[in-house]
Image (cartoon, rainbow, N blue to C red):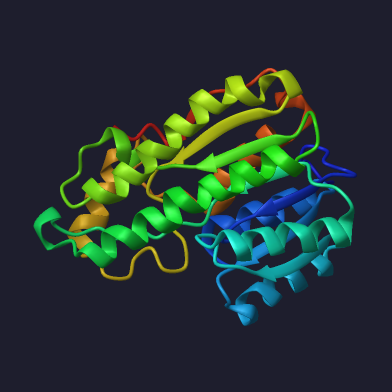
Amino acid sequence: MNQSPSLAGKTALVTGAATGIGKAIATALAAGGARVVINHPHTPELADQVVAGIGATGGSALAIAADISSREQYQAMVERMLGEYGRWDVLVNNAAVAITKPFAQITEAEFDLSFAVNVKGVFHGLQLAWEHLADQGRIITISSSTTALMLPGYAVYDATKGAVELFTRILAKEFGPRRITVNAVSPGATETETYRIGKSGQFLASLEAMSAFGRLGQPEEIAAVVAFLASDAAGWVTAQNIRVNGGTA
């Protein structure tokens, strides 16, 4: 039996949906009945696998390449989505780059890339949602529980996430008259396909120990909360940052 919140008749755009948490979110929204646009940064093979997986379970999905830091590419993606599906109900701002290293070693190019994708990409999505998202729509931005942890090496990454958390709080009031909810979800350490790459066993163990359950989260656990926020059941939830992190502290 499908236990996902009902999203029948809705169209959702998930940025960075070819892998990891984005892939899990897209799959969960499709399981709830939404037609899902799988945005990807010009990685068609991975995106096509997500579309195929959704299709195999009876869902509807479309992969669209776009660099979300480019307004022109983002605009073209939205126009194609509207041309295919005729409406837009849910935006999930998931795409991000995570450059974590000692602050003194961050290059200007890495700083610019971090803000271009993680902040400007969300800015583009929010402004285009203002133009095209249906009334009573849903906006969910993926932040990070690291914004509350003060971890060395995360200064620039967390600065970008702090910015989108403030977008969430302030824009909830601006979108409110249209009954559009605006929320953030902040995962803790989550075991995606690439999460363990470049991390020592000691560091991974320290992350696991931060949670109340002594383990990493799973992408599907994040996706379940996003699917709830995208549903009609969450119509009275807005301006919130929900930390889905197993009690990480």
